[in-house]
Image (cartoon, rainbow, N blue to C red; front, top):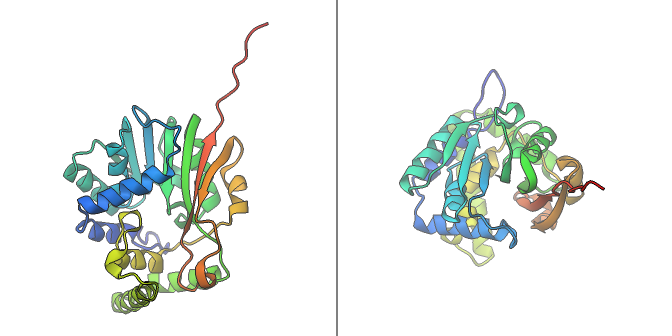
Length: 271
């Protein structure tokens, strides 16, 4: 995301494009494993349609291709993310349609078997509208796979930090990035892990630290908010990482993940 017409937005696409230079088979394997965990056992991807809203580097669209989804559409607000998605689709030989699109004013038509949006819709500036719009794109019998920041006592503080980062000059941003990455790396060492061990969703620790630090606009949701956010017709069938954020969200909250199914319409038979 970028700043347009005075609107403050973090340049997610620039970070994803830079991260894409590090993408390799190992990171793709991590992305595939992360996607498999979220796909219900009852869902056979073969021939199914997959929509990735906020594709970032495109790595998870590529993972969907490797899992056998029949048609894959990847969208992102930021043209740098669209370009990164196209480059990674080409690199890994995946057939992906990559489009620039704003989910709040989407040009998408039709419905999809799986609508996937991981860690994106809370950055749109209107999370409720974004989630409702994404949910409306799920066809009957289809699934919505959603990840949203968990609420914590630090959400208000982080919103201010993120805004301040986004409006700061480049040298200040760089100092903040290095400092926050250092804190995150230290936390990983205390937990008995090195920064090189970090492979969440295929991401590396440095780019994830930058993504968190700059991620503005910023909203969050508690598990009890989800049913209201998605609207009627979808029911939760799985959820992950919904526990409260560690140390009250001081180092960030992370995302809770939700898998929801849209109930097919009831078939009626004439008497």
